[in-house]
Amino acid sequence: MKIMKKVVLYVLAGILLGPFACFHINNTAECSSVSGVGAGVTTGPQRWSADWTSCTYPNTKVSEYWETSTQTIQISCSGEDTNNFQIIPKTMDGFTASEDNTSTFVTYMKTKPDASVQEFLRNVQYECATSQSITILLSESAIPNDVHYYPGTGHFYKYVSSLDITWVDAYNNSQASEFGGWKGYLANIISKGEHDFVLKYAGNNTGNNVGWLGGTRATLSGLNTANVTISNNNIGYWYWTGGPELCAKLKPQYSSWSIEGKNRPISKEESEYFDYDYSNPSPQNSVFYEKIKHSQTTSGFTGHMPFKFNMWASGEPSQTGNGGEEPFLATVKNNKLWNDSVLTGYPTVDNHRIYGYTIEYGDRLWGNSTPLAGSIIVSTNITKQTTLTAPTQNAVFAPGATVTVSGTGAPGYTVNITEGSEILATALVDLDGYWSAPLNNLPGATHDVLITQANSYGNTFPAVPLVFKILKIPTLDLFDIILTEDLTYNGTVKQFVVTLKPNVTGMGAFVVKYFRVNPDGTETELDGPPTDVGRYRAFLYIEKGTDYIDAVLRIVYFPKS
Image (tube, rainbow, N blue to C red; front, side):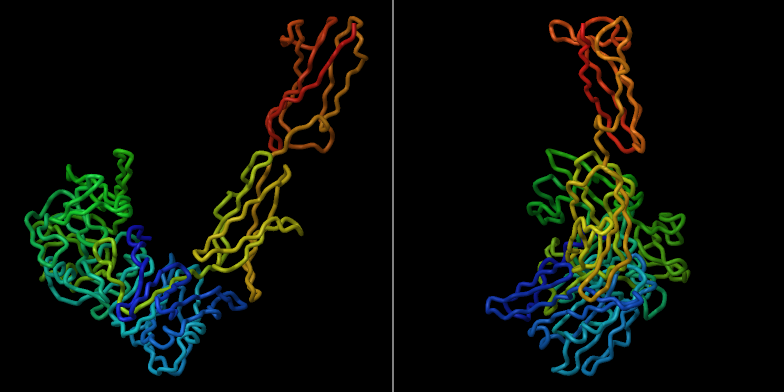
């Protein structure tokens, strides 16, 4: 997932809506106005079919405002595997499907004023084999079919067909483009999910999926404007040239940064990402050439540039080609992976020919604080199973430890942790799909528990087993301790015979050691049991075993004279 771009949609409001302030939260999106007119969407918990192949959100609630103002509904998904996934809206009077709908991205136009958006969303069926993230966009106006929203970044993408366009023209066109008040830039790809999403929707009208992306190793003047020019084709490293990934000529000084004459204090969010040293250009300093993650601590300040991802084709970037130096990044027709290319592509070699470019829209951190006009977005997670993130199977804990069990699940579902017929703890899966439950005061033993997840509809996820152990503390009652004779010294050795009681397992090795108690109160260890008149103490030393911690148990031994 793209870390930097995730922060995009904290504030979503319609500039056509009046004084609304909308907040984007996983599983819910809510808006409120100063006039008291509410506007929001909540999905509620998912409901699974009996065979666990599909689910719906039958408790979805849409406020009166969005019931009347919505003109476009756009639903999309993202996940590790979207091949076995399908969004299936129910055919309803008053809603018309886009001709460009796919199994993972659908757009519907509302064609009748009284058609219920709430009922439409409640009846959308999601068929999936794996967990997914679902994003629902409601808009007051029509959303172009060629503009696609990707939940993994919170950004929109548009592919523009333009045969043999130069990288510079594609860059400037992207910078001049807007969507709903969001400024565009030539797309930057920093995750496998984003790469696959862009390829899915880029170039559908040509079938080539080929075009410019926003990476370069050239020096640019007018960067982040619609008037960029080139002054050097090779500065030794690759970097992204727009939006939140923009790195060239970015010189953080921990309190401020400068880029093309734009100066302002560095924000907390930006400080996490833009402490990157380009004073010594080389592939090792590249953002994505060598998959390097750079981190540095200065004056108590730690910064990271987490762009380790790339999709270079084998042998690329080669930096040279039919047209000379290749300082610009593109996907190419033969394998749809990254390739460096010359300014105008290869007009005579089809597999390197440029068919267009991809624009990316979004990110308020880069002066793009205008809300997406007349829209609201709600995200939720479809969870196919209960997952366990902690503790690991067969983990071992000290006596009296609190064992925190945590994992992921379906938002709104209840998780029960049981041992036999006893419920040890209950937790509610939060809106982001996470749950956690502490287990206190468990006895020393091997605990074999089951984690189940259910909702009010009777959907119960398959139980997940968990085995962990809490070590026991050894006590003297686990041993048989025998002194063969009375304690009166009669010239024979006085010795304890210590044996473990039957059925006690998991104990480490143990040994008895003897100490003489001196007149001043100090103790001197003996080589064996006492053989003379005096005062003694005996201790039972127990090594840590599989079920018990190590311990020293004191046995007081007072031989009589």
